[in-house]
Image 1 (tube, one colour):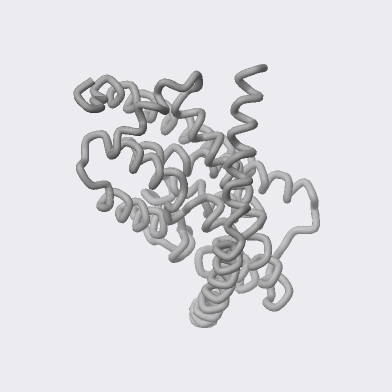
Image 2: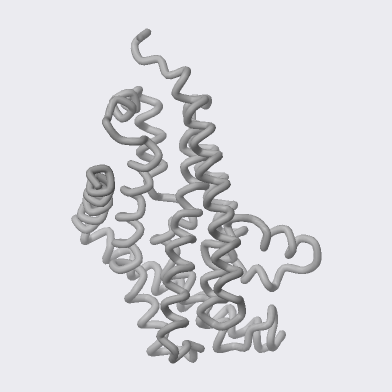
Length: 266
């Protein structure tokens, strides 16, 4: 119970920390809304030419756009979460302090990132999504159970996102500069999650591959659960399996990395 209270407190601290950046949050809301409008008109033009592309009608395609803008920051699809700070702490050696804490390194950062994710979903994701629902034709369910199923898929997606970014952050133990890994994280996140286009649009083998990768749990699966295109149980199994694999991989890499930590020759 004491450990659980610790990680709840860490998550709450992560929420409060991001809540202090009000100007950045307002700017993010504006940016997500503007990009959402641009993407919506692009999608409408595309779906005019190719009706039911990827199995979506126009309303579902528009809904997909606004879901992407709502989840972009919350699930750190392009990065921008804890990984930058952790990589800097590894570079400077401050990670040695983290390792001396009476808390697990991975769980500490997971709790902190879930707090950040919750704030970003509420503070930066809700307004663009509501704007899109008010001013554009969207396809949203009336059944509250579907919304609940969608919420569970988003939570699992947040854990998968953390697992991916934790592995990227740990690469700083071996790399002198992590900027390349962060750029790779951004590119793969945008392409493989479906932010560019729904993964259902991708043809043949390429489509099969990207839909099987963990990034699809960040946007494609939650969107399909909300719009009735995916069985929630199957989506949960997929996301949970990737979460376990990624967290276990992070645990193994963390163990290998922390055996070689050197701070001022100690």
